[in-house]
Structure formats: structure tokens, C-alpha cells
Image (cartoon, rainbow over all chains, first blue to last red; front, side, top):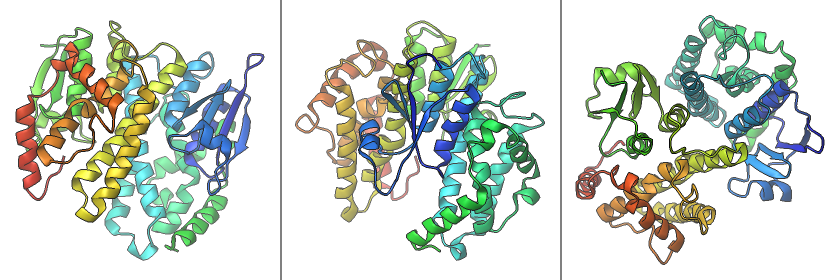
Length: 222
Length: 220
């Protein structure tokens, strides 16, 4: 990091969006100050740095805020461009990476949100099948590559990997096994967790599950 | 065989965004109109995941999702850039493009399709988001500055489609009293030549929307 450079991350420990930014910063070797946010009692700093959405993550770089996890990850990739590029250099490959990261946002996030906010008895078999089909689509896109980014971790990996610590929660609520239904994705998660940039950015799946149960009780669905 | 093809739909703001960017950069392309009620094998082949328009085909390789396509176009054809060079300014443009698509547009749809007793709440939410957008525009000529950029292209549904919706449905969300700055932008925008060439015929759009509103079920 250049002298006088100030990087701060406003985040919340369980957030899959926040984890994306943590992975990206770790991959680039960027030193930053992490400030945990209480989302039920939002700080003046958060409201000042993200007045539009009042959400985390927010990256503050030399006093200037960047919001929305994938916007932040692309920003990080462009500013700290000399190390560990996340997006490929070819425009077509870049477009494919953006497409799949957008897919993760729309489909996996939406499924996850539905699972989290629905009572166990109301979880439909159709929704479960849809979720597993979506994960299988990701498996298809991964193919035989070690990462979605090819030989090295890339943009789509950064978008998806945080869900690796949330899968345990979805498995328990939805009653399915990632290992049984999506073995390739399961193996991918295990493999990526061996990377320090990933393991240090993600949380313990059991801690996430306890947190999810607490959230579900609060929402009255548990 | 044309090097660049676009699978689109005449009334779709997403499809027209891509045409605007291609025209702005002087890129020749073959346009293929898709019947969204009867999707072609070509569309299903080139966008199997979402089965939607627009799809750009460049040398036979498909790209889907309008925001993804817009960035691809900007990176491939360097004339008249639609994104700034500076990473921070670029991040801001991407943020506002996302705000338009993920926050503004759904809020506006919500007014259209909400029940009578929830319409007022939906209106309030849409007004709040449009005021946020207006605040970002301030005294700039366009969101992109002196010339139209990514955010202006993405805001095409506010620049044009919203007016058509308002006329077709009788709903009034955006007017000069409530949104003086946004209305000023709308006037500049629709008179901008690259925009003017890439709008569907207004009467045809209004008639289409009216027929959809009067039918009880409509999927965009």
C-alpha cells in the first residue's frame, strides 16, 4: 500500500457481500481497517458513507466511499491492478465473468434469501429443486477448471465463495446435502478454503447457522 | 455475415440501450426482432440461462444482460466512451446504473401493478428514489457530464418509457413541479440525436401499453 493511503471497510461479519470485498482485498494484499457495523443500530459513519442504501459493505478509499459489493470488487481490481487480477483482460471473457457474477447475485442470493426467510414447513419441494438446479448450473460453468477464473481465483469466484460458509445453513433449513447433490461445488468450496485469502475472509459455517437461526426467530419463521 | 448482431425487441428499454451504445460508437450491426411471446430457437440458443433480450452476438459469440453488454461495447469499441477512465468515477457510474435497474425500476413497476390501497405507498417509494436520482444529477447537463454516458443510457426508461406509461395509465409520477431537474434532463435527453434515433414510436408504445394494462395479466 502506498504511503498515506487509507483503506477502510465498513462491514458486518456474517454478510456474504462483505466477504466478497474481504476476499478481494486479501487477494491484492491490501492493508485496511475493518469496522464492524451494527445493522440494527446504524452508525453515523455508515449513514454518511452510504446515504442511498444505508447498507454494508462500503469501501472507503482515501475518504471516498464505494458501495455495492460487485462495484467495490471491480474498483479494487482496477486500483490495485498489479497483483492478482480478478477480471480477465479479454473483453469477451470479462463479459462472461460479469454475466456469471450477476447470475450469482440474482439467483443464488435470491434463493438464499427465500430459504432464510421461509418457515421450514413452507419450504416447497419446487424451490429446493430450483436451488439445486441453480447450483448445478454453476457446476456446469465451473467444468474441470480449478476456479471459475481458470487457473487462478477470479471475479466469479469472489462473488460466489462467501456462500460456501452459508451452504451449511441452507442444507439444514432446506434438508439437502451439498456433498450428495452438488459434489463438484462441494469439492470446489473445500479446495478454495485452503487459500488463506478465502479462509480468513469467510466465517465458521456453524456460527453462521446460529446467526441465521437467531434471524429466523426474529422474523418469526423459526 | 454481419460481424455484430443484436437480438432485441422494439419496445424493450433494455434492448434500446444496446442500440444506443452501438450507434453512439458508429458500430454497424444487424438487428433481429424477437417475438417475446414466441421465442425463437436463436434466442434460446444464445441466452439459454435467462431466455431474454437483448443478446449481442459478436463474431458469433453471445453476450447477455444489458449492463454486461454495455460494458463490453465500451471496452471493444473505443470511440465516444460511455464510462469514465478514472476508477472512482467508473465505480460511481456503475453504482448509479445499478441503482436505476435494481431500485428505481422495480419501484416504478410496483406502482403499475400494486393494488389500489397499496398504490400510494408504492408512489411514495418511487418518488423518494427519483429524488435521490435527481440529487445526483444536480446541475449537470447529463449524468455523464457534458455528453451522455452509461447512466444516461441506462436511465432511458425514465427518459422515455415512463412518459409513455404515464400517458397509457393515467398515473402521474414525474412532472415539472415535483421533479424540475429530472424533467430538464428528460427534455435534453430525448432531443439528443443518438437517443432520438433509438426510441420506439411513442404512439405505438402507448397503444401497446394500454392494451396490456386493460388485459388482466401481463408479464414484461
